[in-house]
Length: 258
Length: 295
Image 1 (cartoon, one colour):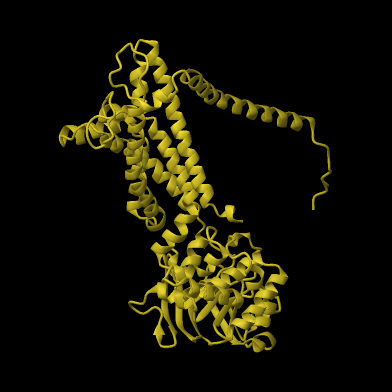
Image 2 (image 1 turned 180 degrees about the vertical axis):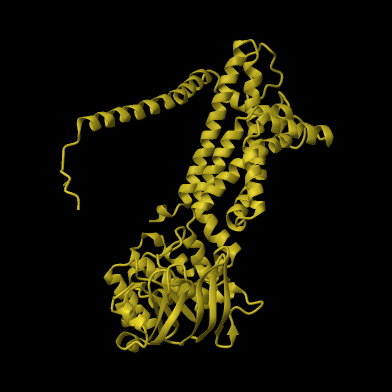
């Protein structure tokens, strides 16, 4: 199910402006990797290069190599649509499809790609909602629109939607920043559970969250406003938060700048 | 730190006065805007009811002499419905696809700018020019007969820019988050457009199309040049002159006797009712499709 990702020397641009530079790292399978760093340092941009969502923005380009096991994600002839099917994504703001019911939201990724029988779909929808710890709250109102749920429930619905297509990797772009502490806790519990099956990468501004949920942490920073963001260091989360090898990392996590 | 501490005060008399004054102006403007609407409706209903009966709705003007009472607008109702339906069939798919191109595929390319520019120009084309174009090209050069279809083509020229602009506005309102959410599920671009973007914009697009329909249903000039006149029922929009309600009003209102004038009023009332019913149908469709209903 889960696969490891190997990143070599990746740069990303927005219409000629370099947003991130020279990023190389290994993202472990069946583990949670957290990206931390100040705003504008390119964490989200880098996350979006991992499933080729970056290039959806007009004028945005990527150079460098990203391999998932033996596959080159940016190789010639690779279909970005199939990359995104393998590497799912959860966004900062919950964004269920407003015209669809809860059931249809979860089934959306499946239905829009293949034909499934009703019973197959029912099974996958139930499994995915259970996987996202949402089943008990919504099982009696699957036909109601997803927009009627609370923010935390909507975000778990989006996670259910993302895992329903059975990706290998799940990217999360600040999934809790719009949620209250209780919903955040629910999502964090969920992340701990999901990592047994998926490779998870999470961008977060909440240092405690990174410390709580991740196995490895990568710290990004930029030299100055307008400069491209760089990977400063990446290590075991316990090491980053207790004895980081770079001064900048220590300054950031202790709140001395940022 | 400045030494001035702001104080909490009562609303000054001047501000209260201005507030009331502007409020009165807004109400007045609203009342003035509503006056023509109400008076038009009132006139049409008051004068149109005289001949608005079953005979009017089910009979044509065939064999009705110049001074006879009786007769009806059945042939004109059929003509208007067919012409407007055909015009919509032509302009809605083209207009919708154009809007999809402009919003989803055009990026900021040159083609997009050209299309936008020409859509703006089309918006300003006087309706009689659209009729003249079809008359010159379809009827005079290609030698086709006067027909409801020729009228529908002229109407579709007038509908097209309205449909494009309305659909474009609605597609732009669809949040980008939804497109990205769909891409991130591994859904291709065109499926995202068909299954996520268009359904989200559906209600607004229907409203826009209805506005375009209402606008062309009352057009007289292009029909005058392309579908011609007839007093008989012609169910075939592809062959021979047809009638339309605006044409009928134009024709009857120009006659000297009161029976014809009454028919003109009744036809105007019929046209307003048809457009109202179409709008109602569109409302029902959007209500039936809206996610809020299922809550």
